[in-house]
Amino acid sequence: MKLKSLLVVALLGVFTATAQKYTNTQMQNTTKEWKGLTFSSEKSIFQNIGNTDAFSKAAPLLKEGVIAEDAMLTAFVMVNSSFDKFSKDEEEEFFTNLQKSFITYYFIPGRVDGNALQKAVANGNGVAYFDTVLGQRLGVKEVKGNLVLFDAKGNTAKIIGQDYYHKNGFFHIIDGLLLPGTK
Image: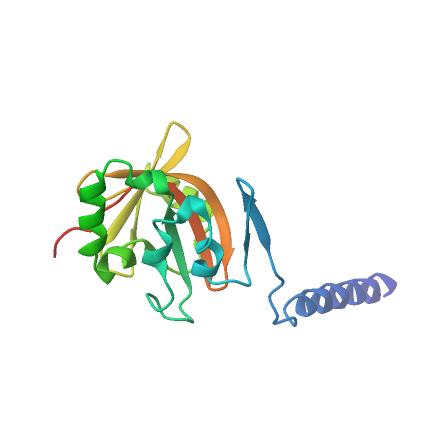
């Protein structure tokens, strides 16, 4: 009888502790650094990268209003070196003719951290595909121990920084430019 009572008390303690784990609905601020920059879960993706030299070319593309304020998304953010293959004229033309559809190709629904990307690649026999907000597929594979994104045209972008929070999800830092296909 004592053993039974002890077991009941122990189980009640476990259930109470587990239930209390989920009673706090406020998200705690999470910060993480990358190359001297600090990113915060209390800021939007634009607020996180908007005033940094490393993302000065990508930041205007991710300006407020490109995505819904409350959308739970994972973004892949390009560092400036991603645009190095362009001449100055090509870069200017690219940004002038850029449409909203281009940047929505860099967003996938939900909070997808680096571990989830890695698991998807492992479960997909070395390749995983995610549907983007644009409605097109974005591929992920592992190359020499690194996660690499790829598009339908064969362009690649290496993930060089993982698991940075923004107030509506995660973002990962990439070095490379991906282009959506034509529908």
